[in-house]
Image (cartoon, rainbow over the protein chains, first blue to last red):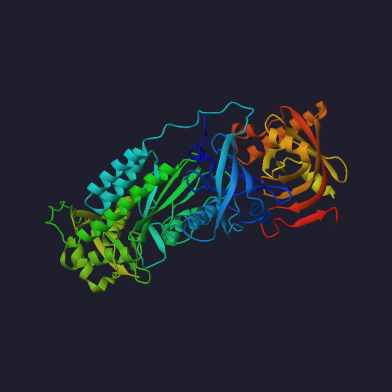
Length: 443
Length: 155
């Protein structure tokens, strides 16, 4: 059976180092481990050569090379005869490889020394399996869903959703049901700060909704900053992405930081940027306890559904300018006599309800704004349009993302089981539900 | 050529990869399964002729060899180059290779690799003993000094 490059996908995940042999003009051999091999197309591979000047010099004097790559799932070895084709120092392929090298470097604990200078591209002349002393193990390859149909199902559900909450739920539930990944988070970028905020999550308790990740930090921040998908396939040998410090300070009432959750035994992680018209609108993050959990097809499927979610969220934002007729508000049991203490700290717009930290920033201002109107005139219904027009809220002018801010606030209030809740009353309309007698104080 | 530290390193559970080339300068990759110093400038290396026939053929043809020793736990890596001679491995040399393989699997398992993934890499079937007269030693640990020459016969 002829082996093709496509059959070797599990060899290009950077889990097990590849080996390259070259020889100089006199035929003196050189042998080296290689941090990263990528498939360029059906006939070419690209090798990142960060350190090994000898290998780089040899292939320029003698363009023949031999590469041994290892399947990260089975350990099977394959021998590739190569012919040096060309070198890249910039461009789209270079950028993709630089990103993969950075992620791969972090994967093996070498992120500090990994910096891609150039990429050497080789034509693959022949591929053969290296004889193995053990029988090939076929077993661990689990059956995978058809990713095209899975993506179609998820896109259909996301596109059918009429509000931001529906979009987020359809995306995350779809990824779990159709792609089989039960741990996922969706982050939104709000533009005013170099960070993204979790607006939806599945598989984590607590949900982590409201957690913020600075651009460039870890896998998620790296995808946000670069606009490219970032993936690690074997974390068994690595320091985990995301700092241990976060996990050691879960007291959000003191820190006013919502803790980013994570699987304790994650082996594979992927962060896919949500790109709309060239802007990174957010990041979809998925993790798994399996090694090499995300294939190229999974990557493609996640990119498709993430993009649909981003477009749907943007559409929901636009549609919310024109509120539809209000649905009847739920009858809310009014004032059962218990007191609800709401503390607003104007310096960071953080809001605490009965001593529990809720949210800060624009979402905090939104809650306080609605509570003011509630206390002054007993109002319990608001439209996105009037909130946008109210200059006292100091909403960022450029695309305010009001829908997802309200969603984030609503989910936080629900998750904390607080006596103040937000209700979606229809497109562009929000209801405020209060159980008890509100006392709002500025601190 | 081989100071005490390097000699001990070569003998410890480190991964051993072998570069050779044929008369057309077509390079070849192989793996070693056990190495030890013979004296101040020669080392012995066990190689499976069944798994790596091209490597053995090249060594018999021209003897030019490069061997890289790399410790998976911290990536400390040295490459030696020199001239090699090949003969069938003796029983005690195969035993020594066997002990190396056990130690290597243990070391890799401590790093989280499953034994069934490691198994395809390590074989001493049709074992040959490659004796290498070391001409030069290079540091290949990833970083600024990668590729720099540590020692050579001429210096």
